[in-house]
Image (cartoon, rainbow, N blue to C red; front, top):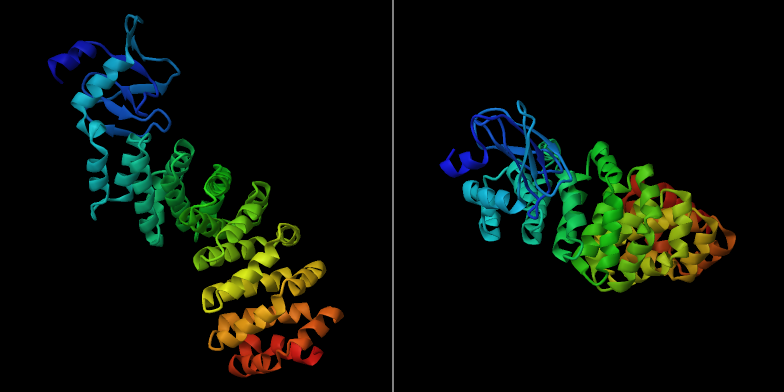
Length: 395
């Protein structure tokens, strides 16, 4: 400890500091002379920069309050003074954005390093955006989810979204990171939802409807989160169905948005009320238009056909699908992708659900799906045999 530091934190005294939230998001906690810590006020996460113990707690004061445990006398150190000593004696806090990004983009960087950098530089949109992007990549590997969770990475990502709502790059990358983290574990899906993640994702979609990257990533995140019923309820309540349908309507030429949106709606449509809600938001015409516009996109044809199959369980939706041109779109999907068992299975299932209504059955017959159904049953008897033959029997 230098002479200047001793003037602020004399070694002969024991201090208890209240940690304040400074402008750069970091507070200072001094200790029993031989050890000090750099502490973020929100999380109590710290980096040791000395040798012994320190006591600290969060305070709303505008300065750091020092209490001599023996004399009980209080001293205050101004924010300006604390920032001055922090930047001088702890260089990591005064790194340039470029230096921080270079450090966390290093291949040897761990989730712990990235999350710590995001905490220390919470007001930097550039660092938050890059940090979320790197976490997105790391989270593709399921084995990394534990290390991210142990550092409370989800909370850091969500805080980045709250703090930088005016930065589209942060919003999009954060949605992507949350989507990858929510791809497997139910506990993670619930954690994202319980900490306000669903509302933040939907907010990002509403704030940046013209930004394709944000829309695609947000739809992907909602798809993974919606695999749990409690989350489906929250997504609907937050306006997620409307936001997803609007993404499809505003980006009709973007096949990736169309596909991810259909995946999200497909997952949400597992609830009967949501199935009706999707139709009320003009979702069915948007789905069919996507199929017509991107006939050569097998993933979209698969997700859209599966979504129509689920929606067609509802009687009213059968008519909505028929009037929107869903029947020829499904037949075209089967004819355009004869080798895809996924497309064939979902399209056959959708047609089977549609023909259960007599008037819709007549409508399907008029579009002559016989050859496509016979080919599907012949090529994929396990996946398509029952549903294809059921349709053929009825028409």
